[in-house]
Length: 180
Length: 320
Image 1 (cartoon, rainbow over the protein chains, first blue to last red):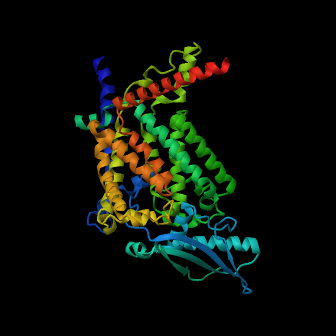
Image 2 (image 1 turned 30 degrees about the horizontal axis):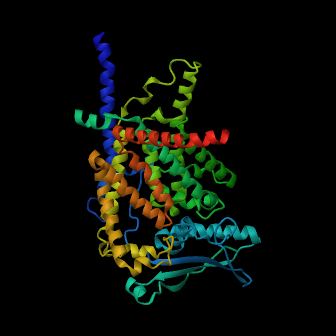
Image 3 (image 1 turned 90 degrees about the vertical axis):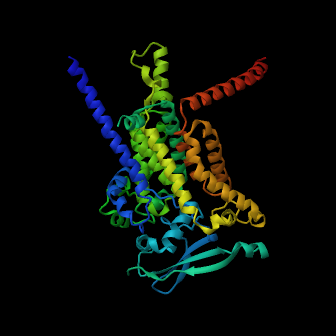
């Protein structure tokens, strides 16, 4: 009888010990992914990758690690049809709505249109733009150019000197061609 | 080994879990409302993020998202509405485990589908959703507990509800994981910021105040009075590096709470990052122990009693 009572307790203790190992792995996974890729210790992070993917605990805390560079940002889409007609249009899909300056869209366009790390997302976005143009106009072959406008911040000493916060810069992208 | 087991399986106040759950649900709902106008832009096939690119970039990983299967605008509406309902029921403590599972699935799903627009608060919500999912469900402050209590009082419920152990201690492992996560957030942030020359010379917040992230980008106060920028820049760093430690000890916990909330209130007031500040509340709740929660409950009762006393004479006046 005594043995019967102790058996579940042993199982419970073993379960708790095993769970402690899982918790420790979770804590290590939280830390290991913070090791920079350039570090010689980075291979230590690899065993935890699938655990992070499965549990959704992938993370990075590199927020505002240096100064922001922009005072304001805007972006428009220049569409040239196959017959040579050009028009500026909104570039938010669906519906070719104009850029709304929301934090999320600001992040999207600054990253996808302006950041080389997001080149593949830009390719997918251009494909979606072309598909939407084909749907709305019934034809393809358009040429697309993104026109980014930066108000780039001056250095602090310059702003203190003359009160001018930023300098205007136009950044047209390369031309993307939709399939005909 | 016994110490390790005690570290993870020792007792915790269930109200600590309940507070994290309630604030996480609230923050998640605020975030969802913020995302709602952009739902088709980021999650539908008609939007700006190509699903085939997401598939390509996540190939080989154990990533999954409900938006891999739901691509139509009506479908995206439905997912958002289900997620909103799950966040509400999680906050209320109704079908808590199922709600926590749906909330976790929601945070993982949009994080993978809308990867290019993610911010730090998305990671906070996603990580804490997972920990809440595996933590004790803590019925103590929940609609389930309240409803069963009410039924029991009326004598219409069997003796099993409300569960007599709803207020009993629960295992502390979830709290430990949440506390650990907050350490990682703040210490990594400090680690990455500290070497930067603008954080070091105290000019960072002056630049930030005139940037596109500021609520008042044309206001030159911090630029003209650079000492304000220096003080607040250094204070931000000092708070980030010290808050997890301050929160860890009962004696200093109140200072940690005050410092952390001051930092995030300042961010919410000056930057267009209000969702971030709200999302940082749940992690703090994980540091409250039984004594702290008792104190909060006592304060709430006192405030309610005072409000009740004030309301009583005016109510009497109206009826006469």
